[in-house]
Image (tube, rainbow, N blue to C red):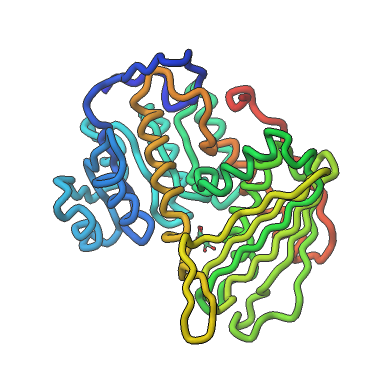
Length: 360
Ligand code: ISE
């Protein structure tokens, strides 16, 4: 497949759909754990214009399980998979500390890469990716902040952008998981979970966060010593406030809530389930027990958009995809929030200015 300037999103004249190649994009997957297996399933059945070409995992048995029935190969070496001539684009769903090396290797051979969050766990690691992509000269990297594709979040952003509720004043966010690994470091509540809210806040409000404070009540008994729940309070450049309750041992289910308060109205995410149950004396709406069913449609749309961006000469004028810059910003903000958690004091956030490559 010929590559024309990487996976960057540029404007296209209406009706000017031109495919770089009519054959499907052959995707190489690194990481066959929970998320990798889900991506492999979507690529093999729910996304058009793509096929799974190769899978690599530290546990080869796991990789073999994921390729079953797909026709994909198991490759033992992730760098060989990235360089393989049959692989057009790379999907990174391996453990967080490995992301940077694989993304850099994909950039080095000019292949589009979709990397699960975080882009890298450290700001320096993210910076090295930004530098490599900037030296390459066009965008190749997409970060898997899938909530930007969730129909609810998309509609919420549309309402704000259409001026339906007036200028934003306060964004209320709630992020709850039923349970997390006992003894999880308190910082991981931010870097692993609240980071989604950090990304979604920047994306929804279209501005940067300039200050963070993190408050903690007494920890939940189920949290096993982790500071959980946490309440993050953020201030944006224009003076709006964002509050995020993140509670990863909430027991009852997986739930994400979001309400945006504007000058003349509010808009909030609707109920996650399309049905209501009446039974045993209650009226109830079923909840997912983890994020995969809750964001199933978002993951599918995210992958389809990425595949289209690789195949199209002139991709869609509008894509919510998170760039390497958004990945950098998310890690930068998460680290600032960790400092706020550790010090108990407000932290001023001075995000470096956005490199030219990432201007809209
Ligand atoms: C998990 O790693 C994710 O990325 C999910 O989207 C998030 O909701 C969850 O809290 C994290 O643990």
